[in-house]
Length: 376
Ligand SMILES: Cc1cc2nc3c(=O)[nH]c(=O)nc-3n(C[C@H](O)[C@H](O)[C@H](O)COP(=O)(O)OP(=O)(O)OC[C@H]3O[C@@H](n4cnc5c(N)ncnc54)[C@H](O)[C@@H]3O)c2cc1C
Image 1: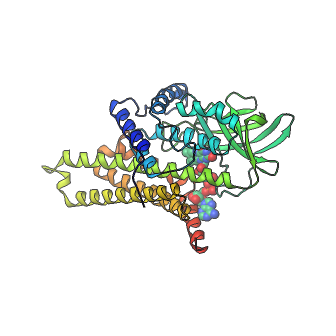
Image 2 (image 1 turned 180 degrees about the horizontal axis):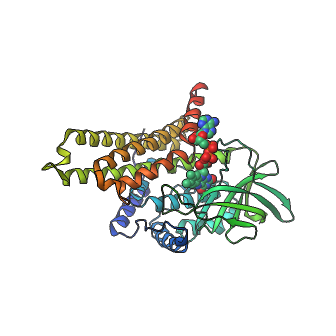
């Protein structure tokens, strides 16, 4: 097992760190649906900066995770969780899908703009009531002339109201295809931006397609099996695992700072054993989560047989650890923690999303059990 970072990954980690120190990447407070145009221009400006640093390129062409990529993701997920999620969905979900499963002409036309951050991508995969990956899709594409007529709907799409291109999964010719739909295409309706518990700097919306015509040149697939869906789910889970580390890091740092500086009863609260014990447990949780995430990423990179098992264990452990750690951080920050816009309160709200989205904690545990039953 080797958690060393390649030279490229280490350079990326340092460039991201430098960018964060220069400032201007943090999430602005554009949480209302009326703010969507400002959010899009703010995201594009910040995508450009992280794109120039190489953040939107690493792991896109090969679709692989690695410990070095996890290390580069954590600081961005700590400082700008919504930028992190929007950028990961655009590059390491939409971009990877295109890069691993798309045709050369599609990649040549779209990928450079995704990697530079000048184009925003999104993926509409899940449908209400189909969180297990082998359920049938209600979204369907029917061949017509030089393309497909697509109808269906998706309930939650990250970047939905901002994206230039959305890859919408659906059934087609007895297989599964991803229809790349440009914003503004006739028949595509993007619903109102959703008001969610967390990730308030991300634009999330439902979408529906009603007889939307998608040219054959804009279709990825169709594929006979569910392999592409499984790959997308695994990439999504990696993103949510890395997001957990960022939430934990910023909430932990905030609570250590607060516990040292805030006085109660004439002492800094870190002097109270109960507070010190909480900080100790939080530190242990963060370090354990990092180790598991690194080990899962190393296994994915080395294509080890156990990689799918460890990936699921990491998703469950890290996302649930994020809720526990941010809850303790909020408790330490006391009345300050209960106010809006501090890393503990924001992390606590965001952590819940990480357990629901991608492969939920419940389904992940079932899958872990299945793999163990089969003797992996
Ligand atoms: C904010 C947000 C953004 C999202 N963005 C995207 C996106 O960009 N693209 C995309 O494709 N999807 C997206 N999703 C959808 C997401 O990936 C999940 O598929 C979706 O949240 C599943 O929710 P559900 O209520 O439909 O799940 P349900 O399947 O209805 O599950 C509800 C509950 O029941 C549990 N459950 C379900 N089946 C079982 C079972 N067999 N055994 C035990 N427990 C079970 C689940 O774990 C969960 O706790 C997003 C979701 C959210 C909340």
